Length: 490
Image (cartoon, rainbow, N blue to C red; front, top):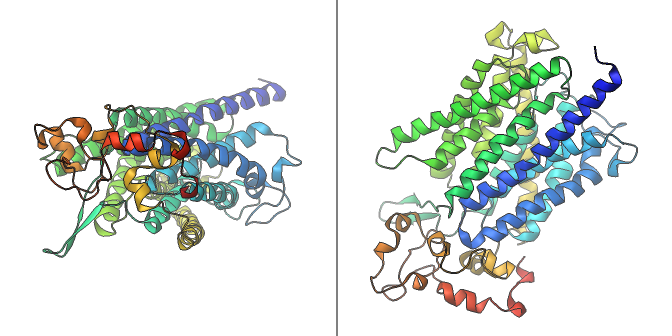
Protein backbone atom coordinates (compact mmCIF):
# COMPACT_ATOMS: atom_id res chain seq x y z
CA UNK A 1 0.00 0.00 0.00
CA UNK A 2 1.17 3.54 -0.80
CA UNK A 3 1.08 5.94 2.12
CA UNK A 4 -1.34 8.86 1.93
CA UNK A 5 1.28 11.55 1.39
CA UNK A 6 2.86 9.74 -1.56
CA UNK A 7 -0.56 8.96 -3.01
CA UNK A 8 -1.53 12.63 -2.79
CA UNK A 9 1.69 13.61 -4.55
CA UNK A 10 1.15 11.13 -7.36
CA UNK A 11 -2.45 12.25 -7.80
CA UNK A 12 -1.32 15.88 -7.87
CA UNK A 13 1.30 15.17 -10.53
CA UNK A 14 -1.28 13.28 -12.57
CA UNK A 15 -3.78 16.14 -12.39
CA UNK A 16 -1.13 18.72 -13.28
CA UNK A 17 0.17 16.80 -16.29
CA UNK A 18 -3.38 16.14 -17.47
CA UNK A 19 -4.23 19.85 -17.17
CA UNK A 20 -1.17 20.83 -19.21
CA UNK A 21 -2.12 18.31 -21.89
CA UNK A 22 -5.72 19.56 -21.83
CA UNK A 23 -4.40 23.04 -22.54
CA UNK A 24 -3.47 21.73 -25.99
CA UNK A 25 -7.20 21.80 -26.69
CA UNK A 26 -6.72 25.53 -27.26
CA UNK A 27 -4.31 24.80 -30.10
CA UNK A 28 -6.69 22.22 -31.51
CA UNK A 29 -9.59 24.64 -31.50
CA UNK A 30 -7.43 27.31 -33.10
CA UNK A 31 -6.26 25.11 -35.97
CA UNK A 32 -9.71 23.65 -36.57
CA UNK A 33 -11.27 27.07 -36.65
CA UNK A 34 -8.69 28.81 -38.81
CA UNK A 35 -8.83 26.00 -41.34
CA UNK A 36 -12.62 26.17 -41.45
CA UNK A 37 -12.90 29.88 -42.26
CA UNK A 38 -11.65 32.04 -45.11
CA UNK A 39 -8.02 33.05 -45.34
CA UNK A 40 -8.87 36.74 -45.11
CA UNK A 41 -9.80 36.25 -41.42
CA UNK A 42 -7.05 33.83 -40.37
CA UNK A 43 -5.06 36.23 -38.16
CA UNK A 44 -8.21 37.52 -36.52
CA UNK A 45 -9.42 34.04 -35.63
CA UNK A 46 -6.06 32.92 -34.25
CA UNK A 47 -5.65 36.06 -32.14
CA UNK A 48 -9.10 35.57 -30.66
CA UNK A 49 -8.28 31.97 -29.78
CA UNK A 50 -5.12 33.10 -28.01
CA UNK A 51 -7.08 35.73 -26.13
CA UNK A 52 -9.62 33.12 -25.03
CA UNK A 53 -6.96 31.59 -22.84
CA UNK A 54 -5.72 34.99 -21.65
CA UNK A 55 -9.11 36.43 -20.75
CA UNK A 56 -10.21 33.15 -19.16
CA UNK A 57 -7.11 33.12 -16.95
CA UNK A 58 -7.84 36.58 -15.57
CA UNK A 59 -11.61 36.15 -15.28
CA UNK A 60 -11.44 32.73 -13.64
CA UNK A 61 -8.68 33.82 -11.24
CA UNK A 62 -10.45 37.02 -10.24
CA UNK A 63 -14.07 35.87 -10.04
CA UNK A 64 -14.90 32.56 -11.67
CA UNK A 65 -13.16 30.10 -9.37
CA UNK A 66 -14.65 31.78 -6.31
CA UNK A 67 -18.17 31.56 -7.74
CA UNK A 68 -17.62 27.92 -8.64
CA UNK A 69 -15.90 26.55 -5.53
CA UNK A 70 -15.82 29.34 -2.96
CA UNK A 71 -16.85 28.63 0.62
CA UNK A 72 -19.43 30.53 2.61
CA UNK A 73 -21.83 30.76 -0.29
CA UNK A 74 -25.04 28.91 -1.00
CA UNK A 75 -26.40 26.23 -3.26
CA UNK A 76 -26.44 28.67 -6.18
CA UNK A 77 -22.87 30.02 -6.12
CA UNK A 78 -19.74 30.30 -4.00
CA UNK A 79 -18.76 33.54 -2.29
CA UNK A 80 -15.06 33.33 -1.48
CA UNK A 81 -11.63 32.53 -2.96
CA UNK A 82 -11.87 35.55 -5.27
CA UNK A 83 -8.40 36.31 -6.66
CA UNK A 84 -7.55 32.96 -4.97
CA UNK A 85 -7.48 34.68 -1.59
CA UNK A 86 -7.31 31.97 1.07
CA UNK A 87 -6.85 29.17 -1.47
CA UNK A 88 -3.54 27.54 -2.29
CA UNK A 89 -4.37 24.34 -4.21
CA UNK A 90 -3.06 25.80 -7.43
CA UNK A 91 -3.09 22.53 -9.34
CA UNK A 92 -6.86 22.24 -8.88
CA UNK A 93 -7.30 25.86 -9.90
CA UNK A 94 -5.21 25.36 -13.03
CA UNK A 95 -7.15 22.23 -13.99
CA UNK A 96 -10.53 23.94 -13.68
CA UNK A 97 -9.21 27.05 -15.46
CA UNK A 98 -8.46 24.89 -18.48
CA UNK A 99 -12.08 23.69 -18.40
CA UNK A 100 -13.29 27.31 -18.25
CA UNK A 101 -11.11 28.28 -21.20
CA UNK A 102 -12.54 25.41 -23.22
CA UNK A 103 -16.06 26.73 -22.63
CA UNK A 104 -15.16 30.14 -24.07
CA UNK A 105 -13.32 28.71 -27.06
CA UNK A 106 -16.42 26.81 -28.17
CA UNK A 107 -18.18 30.10 -28.91
CA UNK A 108 -15.33 31.38 -31.04
CA UNK A 109 -16.16 29.20 -34.05
CA UNK A 110 -19.85 30.07 -34.09
CA UNK A 111 -19.31 33.84 -34.37
CA UNK A 112 -16.23 33.70 -36.60
CA UNK A 113 -15.68 36.17 -39.44
CA UNK A 114 -18.10 38.87 -38.25
CA UNK A 115 -17.72 39.39 -34.47
CA UNK A 116 -16.07 42.58 -33.25
CA UNK A 117 -12.90 42.35 -31.21
CA UNK A 118 -14.23 44.22 -28.16
CA UNK A 119 -17.39 42.11 -28.08
CA UNK A 120 -15.26 38.97 -28.14
CA UNK A 121 -13.29 40.16 -25.12
CA UNK A 122 -16.46 41.05 -23.21
CA UNK A 123 -18.29 37.79 -23.73
CA UNK A 124 -15.17 35.71 -23.00
CA UNK A 125 -14.81 37.44 -19.64
CA UNK A 126 -18.49 37.13 -18.70
CA UNK A 127 -18.72 33.50 -19.81
CA UNK A 128 -15.64 32.30 -17.92
CA UNK A 129 -16.04 34.66 -14.97
CA UNK A 130 -19.76 34.28 -14.31
CA UNK A 131 -22.00 32.12 -16.52
CA UNK A 132 -19.95 28.92 -16.59
CA UNK A 133 -18.75 29.06 -12.93
CA UNK A 134 -22.31 29.19 -11.61
CA UNK A 135 -23.28 26.02 -13.50
CA UNK A 136 -20.13 24.20 -12.41
CA UNK A 137 -20.90 25.18 -8.80
CA UNK A 138 -24.28 23.48 -9.00
CA UNK A 139 -22.87 20.11 -9.97
CA UNK A 140 -19.23 19.99 -8.75
CA UNK A 141 -19.21 21.98 -5.53
CA UNK A 142 -20.30 20.19 -2.38
CA UNK A 143 -22.59 23.15 -1.69
CA UNK A 144 -24.28 23.03 -5.11
CA UNK A 145 -27.91 21.99 -5.26
CA UNK A 146 -27.21 19.31 -7.89
CA UNK A 147 -24.11 17.90 -6.17
CA UNK A 148 -24.44 14.13 -5.68
CA UNK A 149 -27.72 14.10 -7.60
CA UNK A 150 -26.93 15.04 -11.20
CA UNK A 151 -24.03 13.13 -12.75
CA UNK A 152 -21.72 15.21 -14.96
CA UNK A 153 -18.35 13.48 -14.75
CA UNK A 154 -16.33 15.55 -17.25
CA UNK A 155 -18.57 18.48 -18.10
CA UNK A 156 -20.98 17.34 -20.78
CA UNK A 157 -23.46 19.77 -19.27
CA UNK A 158 -21.30 22.28 -17.40
CA UNK A 159 -18.74 22.75 -20.20
CA UNK A 160 -20.20 21.58 -23.50
CA UNK A 161 -23.87 22.46 -23.04
CA UNK A 162 -23.02 25.88 -21.63
CA UNK A 163 -20.50 26.56 -24.40
CA UNK A 164 -22.90 25.23 -27.03
CA UNK A 165 -25.77 27.41 -25.82
CA UNK A 166 -23.50 30.45 -25.80
CA UNK A 167 -22.44 29.58 -29.35
CA UNK A 168 -26.05 29.16 -30.43
CA UNK A 169 -27.27 32.46 -28.99
CA UNK A 170 -24.21 34.30 -30.27
CA UNK A 171 -24.61 33.04 -33.84
CA UNK A 172 -28.37 33.62 -33.75
CA UNK A 173 -28.25 37.23 -32.50
CA UNK A 174 -25.17 38.14 -34.55
CA UNK A 175 -26.79 36.97 -37.78
CA UNK A 176 -25.29 35.12 -40.76
CA UNK A 177 -22.27 36.19 -42.73
CA UNK A 178 -22.93 38.26 -45.84
CA UNK A 179 -24.09 35.98 -48.63
CA UNK A 180 -24.48 32.89 -46.45
CA UNK A 181 -28.21 32.65 -47.22
CA UNK A 182 -29.88 33.94 -50.37
CA UNK A 183 -33.56 34.63 -50.90
CA UNK A 184 -35.05 33.32 -54.16
CA UNK A 185 -38.02 35.49 -55.12
CA UNK A 186 -39.17 33.09 -57.83
CA UNK A 187 -39.64 30.18 -55.43
CA UNK A 188 -40.17 32.25 -52.26
CA UNK A 189 -37.50 30.22 -50.47
CA UNK A 190 -34.14 30.78 -48.82
CA UNK A 191 -31.14 29.02 -50.30
CA UNK A 192 -28.17 28.00 -48.18
CA UNK A 193 -24.84 29.06 -49.70
CA UNK A 194 -22.05 27.22 -47.84
CA UNK A 195 -18.83 29.18 -47.40
CA UNK A 196 -15.96 26.67 -47.40
CA UNK A 197 -12.90 26.97 -45.23
CA UNK A 198 -9.57 27.67 -46.86
CA UNK A 199 -7.38 24.87 -45.45
CA UNK A 200 -8.65 21.39 -44.65
CA UNK A 201 -5.15 20.32 -43.57
CA UNK A 202 -5.18 22.80 -40.68
CA UNK A 203 -8.73 21.79 -39.76
CA UNK A 204 -7.87 18.08 -39.72
CA UNK A 205 -4.70 18.70 -37.70
CA UNK A 206 -6.76 20.64 -35.18
CA UNK A 207 -9.20 17.75 -34.97
CA UNK A 208 -6.38 15.31 -34.20
CA UNK A 209 -5.11 17.60 -31.43
CA UNK A 210 -8.62 17.86 -29.98
CA UNK A 211 -8.93 14.07 -30.07
CA UNK A 212 -5.66 13.85 -28.18
CA UNK A 213 -6.81 16.45 -25.67
CA UNK A 214 -10.07 14.67 -24.95
CA UNK A 215 -8.21 11.75 -23.34
CA UNK A 216 -6.71 13.71 -20.43
CA UNK A 217 -9.79 15.96 -20.34
CA UNK A 218 -12.05 12.98 -19.61
CA UNK A 219 -9.62 10.69 -17.80
CA UNK A 220 -8.40 13.26 -15.26
CA UNK A 221 -11.93 14.33 -14.31
CA UNK A 222 -11.95 11.52 -11.77
CA UNK A 223 -9.19 13.32 -9.88
CA UNK A 224 -7.07 10.35 -8.77
CA UNK A 225 -4.75 7.94 -10.54
CA UNK A 226 -3.65 5.89 -7.51
CA UNK A 227 -5.48 2.66 -6.75
CA UNK A 228 -8.83 2.30 -8.50
CA UNK A 229 -8.25 5.62 -10.24
CA UNK A 230 -5.75 3.98 -12.61
CA UNK A 231 -8.27 1.41 -13.82
CA UNK A 232 -10.90 4.13 -14.19
CA UNK A 233 -8.56 6.35 -16.23
CA UNK A 234 -7.78 3.49 -18.60
CA UNK A 235 -11.45 2.64 -19.01
CA UNK A 236 -12.33 6.30 -19.60
CA UNK A 237 -9.70 6.61 -22.34
CA UNK A 238 -11.01 3.45 -23.98
CA UNK A 239 -14.61 4.64 -23.94
CA UNK A 240 -13.54 8.03 -25.31
CA UNK A 241 -11.61 6.46 -28.18
CA UNK A 242 -14.47 4.14 -29.11
CA UNK A 243 -17.03 6.94 -28.94
CA UNK A 244 -14.98 9.18 -31.22
CA UNK A 245 -14.45 6.37 -33.70
CA UNK A 246 -18.14 5.46 -33.68
CA UNK A 247 -19.19 9.07 -34.19
CA UNK A 248 -16.78 9.54 -37.08
CA UNK A 249 -17.82 6.36 -38.88
CA UNK A 250 -21.50 7.05 -38.30
CA UNK A 251 -21.44 10.45 -39.96
CA UNK A 252 -19.09 9.21 -42.66
CA UNK A 253 -21.78 6.66 -43.52
CA UNK A 254 -24.56 9.23 -43.25
CA UNK A 255 -22.70 11.57 -45.56
CA UNK A 256 -22.13 8.87 -48.16
CA UNK A 257 -25.81 7.86 -48.03
CA UNK A 258 -27.37 11.33 -48.20
CA UNK A 259 -24.79 12.97 -50.43
CA UNK A 260 -24.39 10.35 -53.11
CA UNK A 261 -23.61 12.94 -55.74
CA UNK A 262 -20.79 14.46 -53.69
CA UNK A 263 -17.40 13.32 -52.58
CA UNK A 264 -16.85 11.81 -49.13
CA UNK A 265 -17.10 14.63 -46.59
CA UNK A 266 -14.01 15.24 -44.43
CA UNK A 267 -15.65 17.99 -42.38
CA UNK A 268 -18.68 15.88 -41.51
CA UNK A 269 -16.44 13.00 -40.43
CA UNK A 270 -14.35 15.28 -38.21
CA UNK A 271 -17.43 16.71 -36.51
CA UNK A 272 -18.80 13.21 -36.04
CA UNK A 273 -15.58 12.27 -34.25
CA UNK A 274 -15.80 15.28 -31.94
CA UNK A 275 -19.55 14.87 -31.33
CA UNK A 276 -19.02 11.28 -30.28
CA UNK A 277 -16.48 12.28 -27.65
CA UNK A 278 -18.57 15.20 -26.40
CA UNK A 279 -21.44 12.81 -25.79
CA UNK A 280 -19.35 10.66 -23.46
CA UNK A 281 -18.29 13.46 -21.11
CA UNK A 282 -21.15 13.40 -18.61
CA UNK A 283 -20.95 9.70 -17.79
CA UNK A 284 -17.67 8.43 -19.17
CA UNK A 285 -16.34 7.46 -15.73
CA UNK A 286 -19.21 5.04 -15.24
CA UNK A 287 -19.42 3.42 -18.67
CA UNK A 288 -18.38 0.05 -19.99
CA UNK A 289 -16.51 0.16 -23.32
CA UNK A 290 -19.51 -0.87 -25.42
CA UNK A 291 -21.37 2.20 -24.22
CA UNK A 292 -18.84 4.37 -26.01
CA UNK A 293 -19.97 2.92 -29.34
CA UNK A 294 -23.63 3.49 -28.49
CA UNK A 295 -23.45 7.03 -27.14
CA UNK A 296 -20.83 8.07 -29.69
CA UNK A 297 -22.88 7.03 -32.71
CA UNK A 298 -26.19 8.37 -31.38
CA UNK A 299 -24.58 11.63 -30.25
CA UNK A 300 -23.18 12.13 -33.75
CA UNK A 301 -26.68 11.71 -35.17
CA UNK A 302 -28.01 14.26 -32.68
CA UNK A 303 -25.35 16.71 -33.90
CA UNK A 304 -26.27 16.03 -37.54
CA UNK A 305 -29.97 16.61 -36.92
CA UNK A 306 -29.43 19.82 -34.96
CA UNK A 307 -26.98 21.16 -37.54
CA UNK A 308 -29.52 20.52 -40.31
CA UNK A 309 -32.30 22.31 -38.44
CA UNK A 310 -30.09 25.30 -37.63
CA UNK A 311 -28.98 25.70 -41.22
CA UNK A 312 -32.06 24.89 -43.27
CA UNK A 313 -34.94 25.75 -40.92
CA UNK A 314 -33.62 28.57 -38.74
CA UNK A 315 -30.93 29.96 -41.09
CA UNK A 316 -28.39 30.30 -38.29
CA UNK A 317 -24.85 30.60 -39.61
CA UNK A 318 -22.36 28.66 -37.50
CA UNK A 319 -19.13 28.35 -39.55
CA UNK A 320 -17.78 25.43 -37.51
CA UNK A 321 -21.03 23.85 -36.37
CA UNK A 322 -19.93 24.60 -32.80
CA UNK A 323 -23.43 25.02 -31.38
CA UNK A 324 -24.90 21.72 -32.63
CA UNK A 325 -21.60 19.95 -31.91
CA UNK A 326 -21.54 20.87 -28.22
CA UNK A 327 -25.13 21.68 -27.28
CA UNK A 328 -26.85 18.71 -28.89
CA UNK A 329 -24.41 15.91 -27.95
CA UNK A 330 -23.76 17.57 -24.56
CA UNK A 331 -27.45 17.42 -23.63
CA UNK A 332 -27.84 13.94 -25.13
CA UNK A 333 -24.85 12.73 -23.15
CA UNK A 334 -26.37 14.05 -19.92
CA UNK A 335 -29.50 12.02 -20.59
CA UNK A 336 -27.60 8.89 -21.62
CA UNK A 337 -26.04 8.67 -18.14
CA UNK A 338 -29.45 7.68 -16.79
CA UNK A 339 -29.51 4.72 -19.15
CA UNK A 340 -25.90 3.56 -19.36
CA UNK A 341 -24.21 4.12 -15.97
CA UNK A 342 -22.91 0.85 -14.53
CA UNK A 343 -23.61 0.64 -10.76
CA UNK A 344 -20.32 -1.21 -10.29
CA UNK A 345 -18.49 2.06 -10.96
CA UNK A 346 -20.82 4.34 -8.98
CA UNK A 347 -20.47 5.30 -5.34
CA UNK A 348 -24.25 5.27 -5.06
CA UNK A 349 -25.70 2.18 -6.75
CA UNK A 350 -29.18 3.76 -6.71
CA UNK A 351 -27.99 6.00 -9.55
CA UNK A 352 -27.63 3.00 -11.87
CA UNK A 353 -28.69 3.40 -15.47
CA UNK A 354 -31.93 1.91 -16.71
CA UNK A 355 -30.01 -0.58 -18.87
CA UNK A 356 -28.42 -1.88 -15.65
CA UNK A 357 -31.61 -2.19 -13.62
CA UNK A 358 -32.08 1.42 -12.53
CA UNK A 359 -35.58 2.55 -11.65
CA UNK A 360 -35.51 5.73 -13.73
CA UNK A 361 -35.10 8.16 -10.85
CA UNK A 362 -31.72 9.24 -12.16
CA UNK A 363 -33.32 10.10 -15.49
CA UNK A 364 -35.45 12.72 -13.75
CA UNK A 365 -32.37 14.24 -12.12
CA UNK A 366 -30.45 14.30 -15.42
CA UNK A 367 -33.37 15.97 -17.17
CA UNK A 368 -33.55 18.51 -14.35
CA UNK A 369 -29.86 19.23 -14.82
CA UNK A 370 -30.27 19.68 -18.58
CA UNK A 371 -33.22 22.02 -18.05
CA UNK A 372 -31.41 24.11 -15.43
CA UNK A 373 -28.27 24.40 -17.57
CA UNK A 374 -30.37 25.39 -20.57
CA UNK A 375 -32.49 28.02 -18.83
CA UNK A 376 -29.55 29.66 -17.05
CA UNK A 377 -27.22 29.67 -20.04
CA UNK A 378 -29.83 30.69 -22.60
CA UNK A 379 -31.17 33.57 -20.50
CA UNK A 380 -27.80 34.99 -19.47
CA UNK A 381 -26.16 34.56 -22.89
CA UNK A 382 -29.16 36.01 -24.72
CA UNK A 383 -29.11 39.06 -22.45
CA UNK A 384 -25.35 39.48 -22.94
CA UNK A 385 -25.35 39.16 -26.72
CA UNK A 386 -28.56 41.15 -27.22
CA UNK A 387 -27.16 44.01 -25.15
CA UNK A 388 -23.94 44.14 -27.19
CA UNK A 389 -25.94 43.97 -30.40
CA UNK A 390 -28.29 46.72 -29.25
CA UNK A 391 -25.42 49.10 -28.59
CA UNK A 392 -23.77 48.26 -31.90
CA UNK A 393 -20.59 46.71 -30.56
CA UNK A 394 -21.23 43.09 -31.55
CA UNK A 395 -20.79 42.93 -35.32
CA UNK A 396 -18.10 44.38 -37.57
CA UNK A 397 -18.96 46.81 -40.35
CA UNK A 398 -19.95 45.54 -43.77
CA UNK A 399 -16.70 46.94 -45.17
CA UNK A 400 -14.62 45.02 -42.64
CA UNK A 401 -16.55 41.82 -43.22
CA UNK A 402 -16.26 41.96 -46.99
CA UNK A 403 -12.62 43.01 -46.96
CA UNK A 404 -11.60 40.58 -44.25
CA UNK A 405 -10.55 41.47 -40.74
CA UNK A 406 -6.89 40.62 -41.29
CA UNK A 407 -6.51 43.58 -43.63
CA UNK A 408 -9.04 45.82 -41.94
CA UNK A 409 -8.00 45.23 -38.31
CA UNK A 410 -4.58 43.63 -38.20
CA UNK A 411 -2.41 45.31 -40.80
CA UNK A 412 -2.10 42.63 -43.44
CA UNK A 413 -3.09 39.21 -44.65
CA UNK A 414 -1.98 36.03 -42.92
CA UNK A 415 -0.59 34.58 -46.15
CA UNK A 416 1.75 35.96 -48.77
CA UNK A 417 0.28 37.09 -52.03
CA UNK A 418 -0.28 34.39 -54.59
CA UNK A 419 -0.61 31.58 -52.06
CA UNK A 420 -4.10 30.53 -50.92
CA UNK A 421 -5.97 33.79 -50.37
CA UNK A 422 -7.76 34.00 -53.75
CA UNK A 423 -9.25 30.55 -53.35
CA UNK A 424 -10.22 31.34 -49.77
CA UNK A 425 -12.66 34.08 -50.71
CA UNK A 426 -14.68 32.06 -53.22
CA UNK A 427 -18.13 30.69 -52.85
CA UNK A 428 -18.80 26.97 -52.67
CA UNK A 429 -20.00 26.92 -56.28
CA UNK A 430 -16.88 28.55 -57.66
CA UNK A 431 -14.52 26.60 -55.41
CA UNK A 432 -15.70 23.49 -57.20
CA UNK A 433 -14.96 25.13 -60.58
CA UNK A 434 -11.65 26.62 -59.47
CA UNK A 435 -10.05 29.15 -61.75
CA UNK A 436 -11.11 27.26 -64.85
CA UNK A 437 -14.40 29.18 -64.67
CA UNK A 438 -12.67 32.54 -65.27
CA UNK A 439 -11.50 34.14 -68.46
CA UNK A 440 -8.48 32.41 -69.94
CA UNK A 441 -6.68 35.75 -70.17
CA UNK A 442 -7.21 36.56 -66.49
CA UNK A 443 -4.37 35.73 -64.11
CA UNK A 444 -4.98 34.49 -60.59
CA UNK A 445 -3.85 37.75 -59.03
CA UNK A 446 -6.66 39.59 -60.88
CA UNK A 447 -9.44 37.55 -59.31
CA UNK A 448 -11.61 39.73 -57.09
CA UNK A 449 -11.79 39.26 -53.36
CA UNK A 450 -15.42 38.65 -52.49
CA UNK A 451 -17.39 37.58 -49.49
CA UNK A 452 -18.23 33.91 -49.45
CA UNK A 453 -21.81 34.10 -50.65
CA UNK A 454 -21.23 36.51 -53.52
CA UNK A 455 -20.26 35.61 -57.04
CA UNK A 456 -16.60 34.86 -57.67
CA UNK A 457 -16.01 36.73 -60.92
CA UNK A 458 -13.13 37.93 -63.03
CA UNK A 459 -13.05 41.76 -62.81
CA UNK A 460 -12.48 42.03 -66.54
CA UNK A 461 -15.34 39.79 -67.51
CA UNK A 462 -18.36 40.60 -65.31
CA UNK A 463 -19.35 42.39 -62.16
CA UNK A 464 -18.96 40.79 -58.77
CA UNK A 465 -21.55 41.80 -56.24
CA UNK A 466 -19.25 41.60 -53.25
CA UNK A 467 -15.99 42.73 -54.80
CA UNK A 468 -13.87 45.30 -52.93
CA UNK A 469 -10.68 45.25 -54.97
CA UNK A 470 -8.11 42.94 -56.45
CA UNK A 471 -5.83 41.05 -54.10
CA UNK A 472 -2.88 43.21 -55.11
CA UNK A 473 -4.92 46.36 -54.63
CA UNK A 474 -5.87 45.41 -51.10
CA UNK A 475 -2.26 44.78 -50.17
CA UNK A 476 -1.16 48.09 -51.62
CA UNK A 477 -3.91 49.95 -49.77
CA UNK A 478 -3.20 48.43 -46.37
CA UNK A 479 0.54 47.88 -46.48
CA UNK A 480 1.72 51.03 -44.71
CA UNK A 481 1.93 51.24 -40.94
CA UNK A 482 0.03 54.52 -40.83
CA UNK A 483 -3.27 53.00 -41.92
CA UNK A 484 -2.71 49.32 -41.20
CA UNK A 485 -4.85 48.93 -38.09
CA UNK A 486 -8.32 50.37 -37.76
CA UNK A 487 -8.59 50.65 -33.96
CA UNK A 488 -12.00 52.25 -34.01
CA UNK A 489 -13.49 49.24 -35.78
CA UNK A 490 -12.30 46.72 -33.21
